[in-house]
Image (cartoon, rainbow, N blue to C red):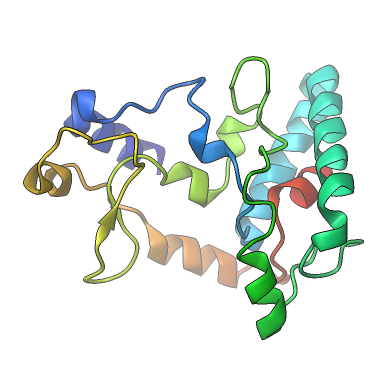
Length: 184
């Protein structure tokens, strides 16, 4: 995934304006797959062992985020498991849309778990086709001066098949959001 992003970024050149400190994509809740949850929990485990102060700060922000949004959480606010009913899914559409990600350092604009970030974060920015034959999407701040052909030429290849295979190997199929995944 990192190699695919690097290749797309090289092709995009000045059209890809993503950089540390640009945080538009770091706001709003999104669904985490069980694999994303494992990534974040692995990262937090490593941080707890190597940088306890940073891990503690991320944990503090995650707990504050949960406290702020638990009342409207569309699922089990105790465990962080998202609900699967039609009503829960509808409620998620408006859930915490403007909230900063608890992994985001509000001072530096840096993602404190960048190395272990979820797939949604990994594919945001460069042009990505989310499904076969689907339209290509990209960050609205990027490619503002590119024509449609230039956008297509910079499309990032995403290994969705591998991601789905790995998810199938995980016993839990529970989905959650970043705040709950961070506190494990």
